[in-house]
Image (tube, rainbow, N blue to C red):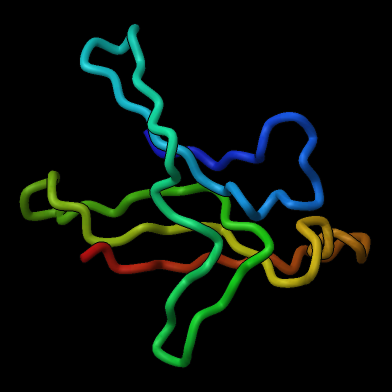
Length: 103
């Protein structure tokens, strides 16, 4: 399971220190949570790296030929200095989606 997370204990404004989490279960009842994050808020693009203020809603796109091989990670992201910058103008949402190939 991939998840969007914030640091525990109200560590704002350093929310970007931890943006993702990973856990797995063999039986659906007992879960193992990994201490490291599977991805950060920094994404390498062909034009350089971008540190997004949010990187949420993780979705994995699997190869339709086998349904098992992961091909890309999709996230909702936003730019700015704070995670709430995308909500400052009423009725406007400055977030967008990205797809990052899984190598």
